[in-house]
Length: 318
Image (cartoon, rainbow, N blue to C red):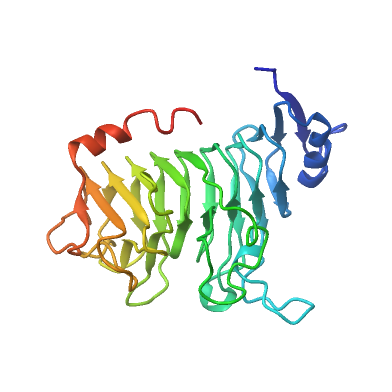
């Protein structure tokens, strides 16, 4: 593999780029080759869009690199229509083989009640990695394409992916911190969350949210897999569900995770979908929220064979 070209982003360094957008533009001169953007600590109020393959964003040093913007779905645009969910992303990633390390991606629009859905990261790519990253938002923090085949309401998918072929991606999130409230990890991709902290925000409600909202395509063997993750919160006990199916065949598994007291005893909701089509399963979990007594009848325990498969090679190519 070719050695990566390094491009530096640092407002205080002579010869470095002062904005991410400028650096991303410069990287396109190396299209087809590995490129690493080394980013100095600081707050970068920018929306970024990466189409180029083999791009790495790497936070430099021990300081925090924060990429932030504040678009929300309820925002009214110049043509009089709402922005909608899929035009809110702070970071939109299309480039195959993308990697992010030591980066915070944030949507600062605020709670869903006032801002609507607000994506920190939208990934529509193949084989991406996020390591030691922080993804911060409220409703719909992280979207992993593909979208479902069809929308339920006209204009519901308005945005960059609405008319594209639905392509599967396989993604790895390792040692990341992901925060949100309602359906804040959602989409149809295959994704392994390994050793992450998944933080549910308190909205002061009887039910404060749902972690995963998968729309896994029919026939896919994998959806979202959370392995050795910690599910934490500032919510009262029993007020957060682990997941609900955005579409009929949504699939999410939880393996060897630590589940806090905020997890509702039922664990999952069916969101009005036909039971028996979607798949929510658990195996080897611990913590106050891990007791399967009282779990929703449609959820199940993973088999040893399935747990062995999770340890296999499905995500090793990323």
